[in-house]
Amino acid sequence: MITVPATYPIGTAGQPWGTAEREEWRSRQSERSYVVDVLAVLERLRSRFDVVQYGELDYAPDRYSLFAIKSRDWRDDLAVALVTGGVHGYETSGVHGALQFVERHGTDYAGRINLLVIPCVTRGDTNEFIAGTRMPSTRTARSANPARRRSRRQSSGA
Image (cartoon, rainbow, N blue to C red; front, side):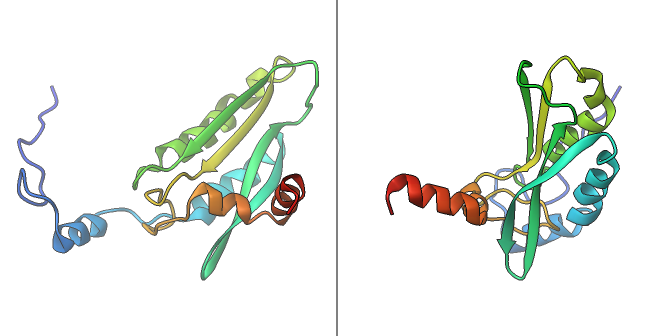
């Protein structure tokens, strides 16, 4: 049987956290690394899947390439299964889950469906992945792709 403590070790029950509580919570979090947690996994997947860059996130002073993982033998006659992972707050389980799924089970679907996995979808200013720093919204990530900006301007007549 699992014993759950009656109170959380940070803060006072029923009271909003202040700066000190947030800093204490952050100090207990493990360090996150896009290079280790995402890019290294993508490199391992390149032998079995097509890994394509579809955009770039410019989050000064850093830049993060955004990737999609596709079935190697894509066929137009097959259905497409889209798997996305994202970040909510400080929870990175969506990103890790999407990458683990494709790494462990992705080839099980070869020839049955086209698999498209986008492991790092961000939405809104509360999304975080990189060492507890806030990442811009999806709109910013999308606009970081110059080809997409051009096609949007062309379709709107701008």
